[in-house]
Amino acid sequence: AESEAKTSLAKLSKKHQSELDHGVPHREASSRFLKSSSVSYFNEASRTACVFHPHMAANELRDTPGRLLLGWALLLSCLVLLAWRIHLHPADYEWTEYPTALGDVKYYTALGQEDRYEPNLRFPGQEKGLHRRSVDPVVYDDATMLKLALDATGRHLVYQRAQAWGDAKASVYLKSGENRYIEFGARKFYPPYVPVRP
Image 1 (cartoon, one colour):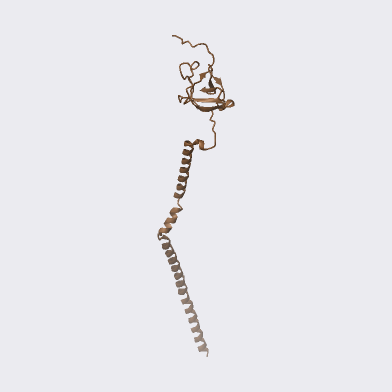
Image 2 (spheres, rainbow, N blue to C red):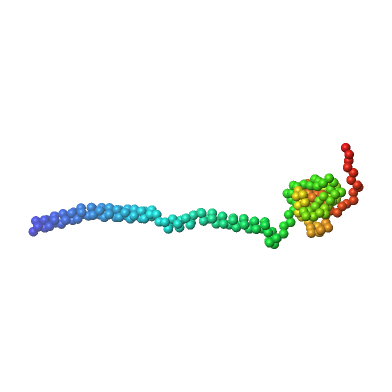
């Protein structure tokens, strides 16, 4: 009986040792299987992501900065058309501009031989002219002088004082320097002009 017990115990020990020895390779095989499965899954996902789809490319094009550039181009085109429309038909838009003499450098020197005795200042389309009324320039702030129009020669801008704006009988002025103006209007009495002989 004692020998049989020893024999049974030895068999059980061998069986337990065999199970332990075979368990490690099984665990290693399972680990390798899981790793290979994961690698295969990610490789398949990568190949799927790299496949070219025409409809996806079209969607990406619609989201590119080209759409922004196209929008800006359309906006600028509309602004240019509006500005050209305003330039051609300013009367269609309800605003009034009163440009001042600030920045005007088309200084008056002379319109004719003697502007005090000859009505040399004329507006476009008018035959009746205006005479020079002042010998020396008068001082007015450029910001208070409002533009009427160009003279008939197109060389000088004609101004009127802001206080007299709209008064057809008020004097007008040509700019002769910064804050300096020559008055024009109805003829003022001066002694007869006699040319000085050299």
